[in-house]
Length: 463
Ligand code: ADQ
Image (cartoon, rainbow, N blue to C red; front, side, top):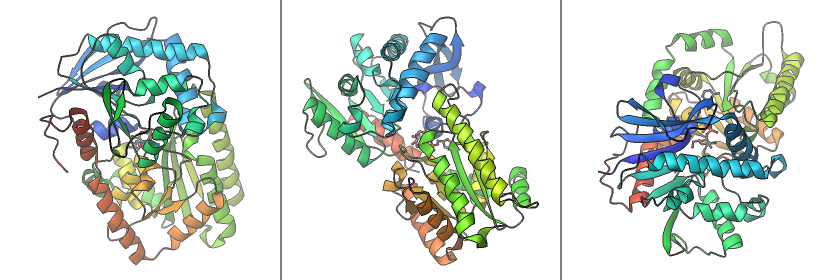
């Protein structure tokens, strides 16, 4: 049976403890049959390492690479998070392109490729994750690596009119076609990728067919990521008995409770959400003194200037809302910038009457699925979901909103707070069914099947 080799920017080393992050969560239960996982250690060293450090952790072998300060700045802070991240989230105005950063991005990818090539077995299946590593297959091929290599993009893709803003657009697009499989979260992202192929490379994909590129065949598909829905549901049921859940429950004193859980990132639409909550208290005064909104926004990428600016804006907005509407015995908005453990989150979601997920763009958004999984089927809460999250393609029974319109979010908050039990149960039943169809397991199985052409001998069973 072929070994799966995962390559991602960060490696979830158990010794470093759990951090907020999509990939770690989606894959952690799945590769029980052994795998190698390579990526950045999270450490800054005097020089970027030329070979990986190996760590064994039961079924998974980890291989990590330390980065120099300069490579970290150019590759991670620079090209990956100040160019590709804003671009792929439809924010070209936030792009800070610098040719040296792009060179650094290519150089770090070559370093990863060399370190990985030393560890590869001939029949390994290589599964590369996310926008940090677009050039990796090209760099591996240059070293003579012949293994099957797949790429999954966790974030959205953009149409040609937006992608063309990137000075190295065509080069990156060609690099994506060096993979054997290219997977996206949603059909819309696949559609936008096809738009780029046609515009930049004059490649018209026949519906459902692989792409022929330089004599090779490239499978492209939408393979949505999911969670272990039933496992998370069990965790939530148990977690409501936890000390943290009791503390929260006692502190809200019978108020309706709304929750938002995100990384502190401008793609997540937090300022509009805060504004929407302010409007709710203004336009629907019946909710004053009766609703508490908890926003957990784990600090993220603090080295990138735009994230510092966002934090200042949210500090200001939350102070403004509480200053205006709080009473001596009621605080409407609780805003915290620390990550919370997965178990506590599961319990908090279950207690929340409303889950608010309003990104301006999002590849999938697993919080939306976790919120649904955590609900009590006999008294479920209501999910408010941005139409621009990949999750909205599947979760159509949520209240779907346009996150650019704070007043639409306000109306959705009100609708969710007053929604009758029958309607809540009806929506929840359908949504739960959907998140049990597309899970972490089906995601991995479908991707590996695409990578092997369906003949891999991997026994990833359905959940
Ligand atoms: P992220 O942008 O990190 O991931 P998301 O899918 O919302 O976004 O969250 C991933 C995980 O992090 C979830 O399990 C969530 O519970 C956890 N998390 C988020 N905020 C947290 C917080 N404040 N405290 C604790 N945990 C937190 C990227 C893409 C997404 C895509 C994922 C997976 O941007 O669109 O869904 O990868 O592919």
